[in-house]
Length: 455
Image (cartoon, rainbow, N blue to C red; front, side, top):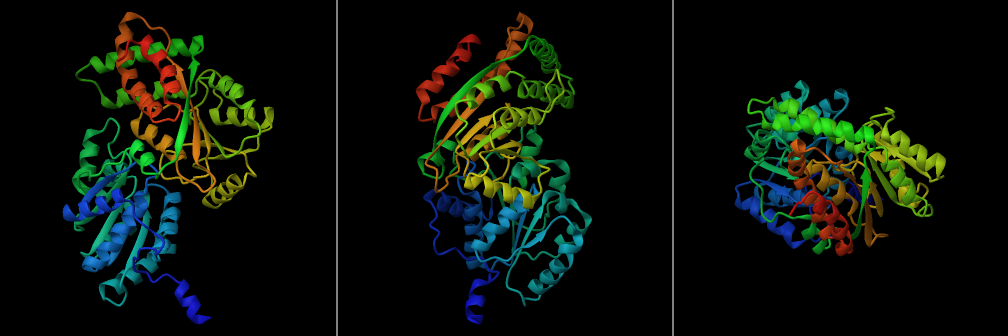
């Protein structure tokens, strides 16, 4: 009995699970990181196995040089628990250094001291970006041995000035992870990320590559076009005009331009007629399950009602669909409970904000309705890729994507709108191209393409 218990406990040293077979692109990425002298960034589609690749790399590095410490930095608390779960598959016993300092500081000091004296062979630490910046954690970084590997998860976040300066410079072994390491409208931040962690390693793995490799499931894609109300159209035109003026001003304040783009994005994200489209779509799907409704974090521009509240009222009260909300305010324990209820079908759907952007793992999603339009390439890639994660009960996914139709604009703002729309439409077309119903989806999107004379 004692022997069985000992075998069940993690050894603390990284070891590949016996049931794990790495895909060829994962093996190649690991080999290229070693060839780049222990630095590099993995740019792989959401759901394609970046976490597994990183932990396998740490295991190989431990075998090769006697790696002593693995430090994993995550942007959010829920990612700490997900990394903890994956680490235990690799026989690791991590210290979770986040939230209350008195929970982790003493164990961290004891284990770091034991590693440095070689009485403890290996130490894994998982922390958050917020904890990394704190004085208590910064004080411990100076005691990390040279044989430490730093993994930055969703590494684009670490390009923010305060976070980038908090990264330890004395540690040379570094690995960045992100489907989209580039920071939107922040070339300087992108350069900081790649300068610290290393350039993007080959092979880069696109969404199409991941589907072809079987790392993500196939899908059907249905773009749903949403017109703006007359009031929304008027506000949209005013914002587009101001954006055009800001783009043409060589001395423009970049923060002002960003604020205008965010404001217009929120107007699009909360367009009130999206609810009419959702009502029409769901009336014939009331017996379905495993459906996620992805909302904007904004409010209706006219009524000031949060979109998530309006969606919950429509689905739950009006249509009787069994749903619950899943947001940043949902506790870690409640998230796990909701995930289980969703997986068993007790809940037919989850109404969420931002949960698809980074790291959240709900592979049981079979159908998704995206109401939150985004011009941010990172969010676009993250949201759609996360829906395609494989699950034993799922061989394909269905995605309904609401796309707001811009109003007719005057000649002055027409060219501005064409240029802003061009990149966004390109992403929609690329996603449509990978769908099983590609021809049907692309035909729908060509209507928008033709209206704005976009190649």
